Image (tube, rainbow, N blue to C red; front, top):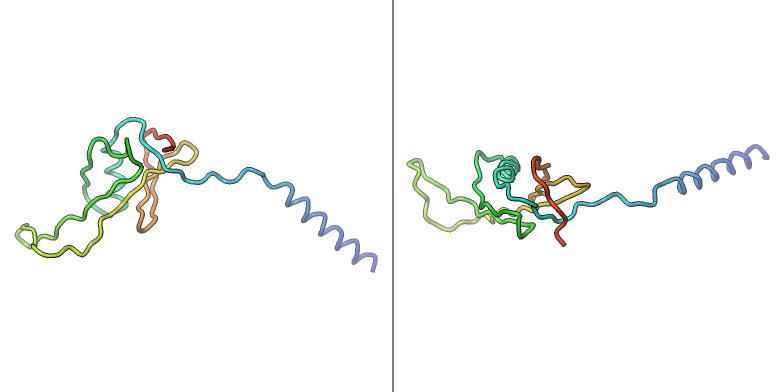
Length: 126
């Protein structure tokens, strides 16, 4: 009986010690960001990877004034390369620039797929 009480007390003490040993700082979350200087090529490369696409063209000021960008889907083309006329049912793709621990990321809003973007500097968008 005493041994059982001793074991239970030891378990409780270990549990309480473990709880107090955890860091009081929370894990940093992704925050909306803006580019410090333009780099549309690096952004286009990451967005193309997220879309499984060959090439994306973006404005030079992408992510400089807004942490989101919307890309309209291209019109479907026939076998001769001419645009097919008619209603477009696809929604545009939206992306956001995020930062965590001074590392920049691009996230696709629909799928939540996120990729690191290298060779850029970004800051938190207040």
